[in-house]
Figure 1: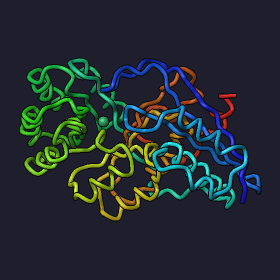
Figure 2: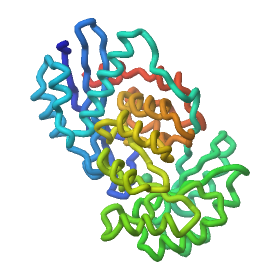
Figure 3: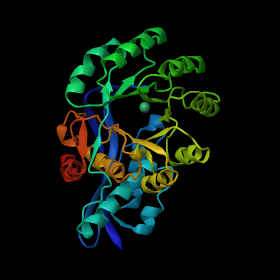
Figure 4: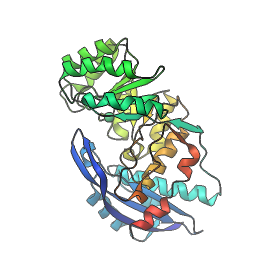
Length: 341
Ligand code: MG
């Protein structure tokens, strides 16, 4: 079967700049793809590249798409190199959407709705944000730490815990900012607090990081989560093989074979949190479909990122305490594709 193949590269300004551990992001670059099969069924996908997270670049995706040409076979799609993992995710999304459209049935969701984590700002600004978010219905909160001094932040931790509504869960994300001693101080402090997990306490590329992360995970009761340490299917496989006892923060858009890798995580009964890679609506629908098909424990989504783009046509569903499977199916991917014309 030969499909018609089309792609559109984008460079979209963000509504407000996003601060990451790797610098300030003012615009988002990536590539949307479109496949149309012989029956006229159309599927869309997105290569939401994050080169600083270990993915290919938008230039590499564009070159590979140009090489594929306007007519492609399944064999040609399958032959896209594994290192182009964002492009592979895009093509997988476009072909599976195609298949489900042809069969005239919606993608089957395991979950009807999923909670969404609210993102709290670093530093003292956190304190004024908790109450309005709690009143809006959020019960999972994610606080960026490792930004200010450790003593100040540890004092703030008690104020944050005191401000949380009862039954709330707090996620801490250090984005790899700590050394061993600081990570130990935090883990000692978190032991009796409502901390769901600490994300990436030490840098993924620090010397001996894997042994250090494993040691910390074994020595303290608060679970640890891997985020920057998981820059693709290979990293997930390696940590899975090593019996990682903590949480896997999975950005489906960065997995070349999201369905296969998630099936292996599910078979191992791993703890998984689904997270955004700052996709447009196109990649968001594909990534969220994976989250809604996850058969394991339903943890709050790390998708509280929209509105994100200066042009709202590219946004996924606006931030709310819950996301429903039907909200995901309602995402208008065709409008996002057409808006790039
Ligand atoms: Mg993180």
